[in-house]
Image 1: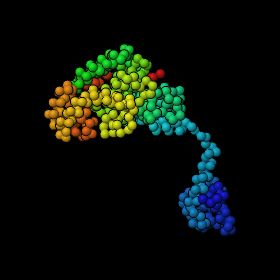
Image 2: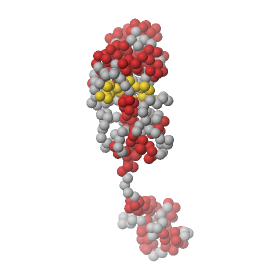
Image 3: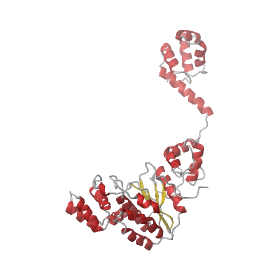
Image 4: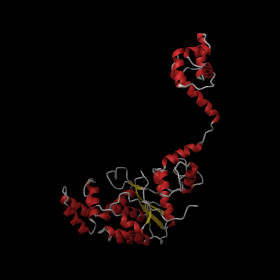
Length: 379
């Protein structure tokens, strides 16, 4: 760009003066309308790419320099009449960071069209229990109200808000440590058959634990969470993103150990990627190690699993898995899941990992998979 010029017309006028030309002469040379040329010179008409190429060729000016001057000039004019809009950045963070279409589809926010920005914005304020868009917790500058861990993503936080909203409406007796211990014992008796999982919601409700299933939002990778509405009201929510018997029992027992240890009262940590080939690849807190150990031990006691692997590795025949599961009094799919975790071979033993959500859901509070949890409409 040539220094000292604010518009392409000023640069053109300078080159015309050096040649002793007028605008009329330039128009004749270019075969252009004289009025159009004069308007470009005086800044009353924008320089377009074709004019920049033609005038640049005749006047010995790089067309890129002319177009750069035009862009700079137009931006300078726009700044004089355009006021900064801080809300634009807020909307970009919210509407770009949240799966608005999915939230509408799931009935989390009441809007007909994700492109209806005023309506969507108003509904997001209600959903996040905020006074304005600027106060919504997923924004970097907003105050934290959910006591959630800092690394939580906007999508994960939205899921947590939905869980909290539903859990607040649920009724349960006061929780005690002894009731949780008793519940774990009763749950252990359900492991032999997949259909026995239908009893889980009632057992947890009777122990004072609010239990619910909330389908994950796309990309959240959440398996479950434990948190407390108050010191006597724990909540366990699961996404069942893997609809398998082994995953269900491991994640459930993992979350129940968080309850027993009273984790999640100060800082809520969403449990993500508890299963699969990425499980444990990130740094794991002491709380998570305790919960992981409890989940694995509940499914298959570690000392018995060690002996089984030592006897049978590297070949695990189906009859061996079935016999081991019968000895333990658990479903073969639960053994299969723990073998996968220990061997790292998630491609093996899958035939035993039956689906289980259809057994659990009828007795539970469910939000997702086509169902909307029965809660009072937001005010």
